[in-house]
Image (cartoon, rainbow, N blue to C red):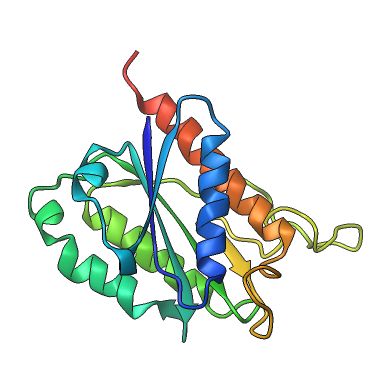
Length: 188
């Protein structure tokens, strides 16, 4: 089963999340995981062969990065006109320097892009963490997203220190979930 992760990262924090998603996907037996930074180029034959493509972007000013948007608009036209990604699974993750940072808008943008390609979106099936007096910032899904993974990295911390472990563990969970869901769609 081939899983591709396509992401952009401005300062390294989103790249760290992409690696956590990949690590989670690799924890499932039989998953072949490829990671592509849009700035470094994309292997189109790998994307066409992928069972799932997971998209990631920092959230800047409430939106996906300009590089990921350019990839969506310019680079995927050939895949879109022939619906080459139809029925592939898709999922997404985003990081910002603000705890909220309007990250939902970035995930909605990714999900809409996937829908326009005929893809099937996989969200999180986790209840929100850190939402009661007995919960903790160490909970999975501490920022409470269902559409995809939201992570937070303080702007004064390097990628080695942020996002926190709970966000990275949530990203690993998404990677595993996408592979497990893709397995359900494979022919018997």
